Every structure is written in structure tokens, then in C-alpha cells.
Length: 304
Image 1 (cartoon, rainbow, N blue to C red):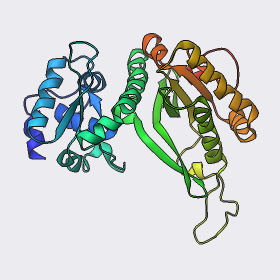
Image 2 (cartoon, one colour; image 1 turned 90 degrees about the vertical axis):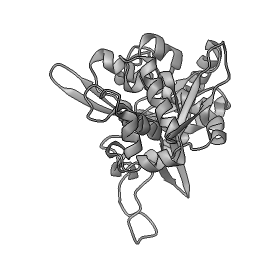
Image 3 (cartoon, one colour; image 1 turned 60 degrees about the horizontal axis):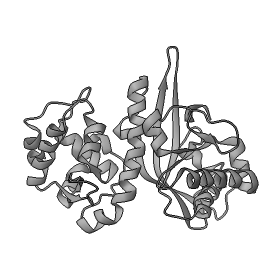
Image 4 (cartoon, rainbow, N blue to C red; image 1 turned 90 degrees about the horizontal axis):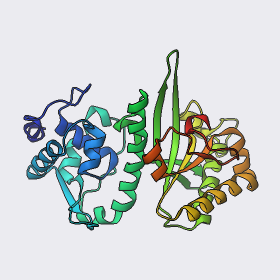
């Protein structure tokens, strides 16, 4: 990784991290697939300057480790969305922070153009949680957000979460380690299809482990216990439509949780909530902006 190291030679280390900023940028793009310059700065160096991040990215690009696509301009400012080249993706396979995590890099302009809108919105959701965690003294960083986590739900089907979030609430006397599956909805699918995602999670909740060498499970217990000490919360982050449409989509999620037998059983055991992305960014992800899908007044996602 000598060229990447040269890219980092003139940059300072990130606060609390032994890794040069260039290495963190490579790891961040490997983890999050694609991100803008501003998102990378907010993610990796929130107190740093845009110029510092731009210097690192341009050096990595000249070394052949990253490339970018220019987003459609809404004003005169050009926004670059960055992703790893095949060479950059190869280098990140051995980074300690990514050890054990499957790589799903975006390594071409065509792939970037197809995935950019949704992927950047997922990064926005992560940054809303990360910014609130910094403000509150909680623990949630770039490596506590794993995109596209997939689990079997039986019959050859899988549930794929937009992200799995790890979050530690730090209190004066104790800490709470929380996990959540995060679904980011840009209002590009029908409300019915969005609500049906809850059925997939309900099937995962009830899916039993398959003992090796047997055709049918015999008391193997829930399959999710292989990965989680408690079933993660399920959080829907909504955007891309008017407040009225987003409220209707939330109501459809609540109706699914109330009337579908499998989802109703899930809702009795698992914390479910929905919020508007712009509210997370404006007020804070840990504020009382989350609507419980089982009913009740808005509250913080940690208190669903």
C-alpha cells in the first residue's frame, strides 16, 4: 500500500485514530460505497476543512485508487461523488477496520450513476446519527454503519437491510449497546411495497436455524441469534416527498404492523419506528421525531 501511504504522507492523523486520513478515505469508500467530498469530510474529519479532504481525494485519484462522478448541478457548484477503482478496492481488502466484511464496491462510472441517488441518501442518514452521537457523547462512527446487510428468511429468499447500525448510548452510570436495521425510503417505490418490507423482517424474526445435515429444523432456535444478542430495532427513514405523502407512508407502515399477523407478532417484541430524514438532520436523530409503528406519540428512537 505504498502509493496510498505516499498520498497520506502530507496529511495529519484523524483524531483518535492511528490511520492516516488517506487510508481512512479508502476504508470509508469501501464501507459506504460512494460519498461526496462534503460527506467524507463530515464522516472522517468533521472539524477539518473541505480543502484538506479535496487534496487527499485528488491525490488518491491521481494514484489510481479512487474516481468520481459529477452529480447533476442544482446550482453553479459542481458536486463530486467518489468511489473506489478496482485497484483501490483491492487495496482495502486487507485494511484492519474492514476485516471480515464482504466488499461490495462501486468500481465504474456506470455503476456509480445507477447507485448514487440511493447510496448517498443512505450516507445522509448515517451522518445524521453520527452528528447527534458526537453532540451527545455517544458512540457511533463510520465503521458502526454497515450497508446492505443480508439474511436468509427461508425458501431461498433473503431480507436485505439498507444498513445495520451499531450505536452505544453513553450514560453517566451505564452504557446501552443498541443495534438497528435501517431502511431508507426515497419515495421511489409504492407505499404498499415499502410496508411489505416489514413482512420480510417478520419472517426473519421467526425463521429458525437449520441444523447441519438435517432437512428440517429441530428446535434450533431463531436464526437471528447467530448474529445478534437481541433482535435489532427496525427504523424507516423517509424522504423524497411532501409531508402529507410521507405521513401517509408512515400510516401504511403502522397499518401493516397492526393488521398483518406476522408483523403484529414482530411489533410486540421488536421496536419499530419511522422518521423523516430532514427532521433527523434539522433536529437530531436522537430527538423525539420517531413515530412508533405500534402506536403512540413521537419519541427518540432509543426509547421506542
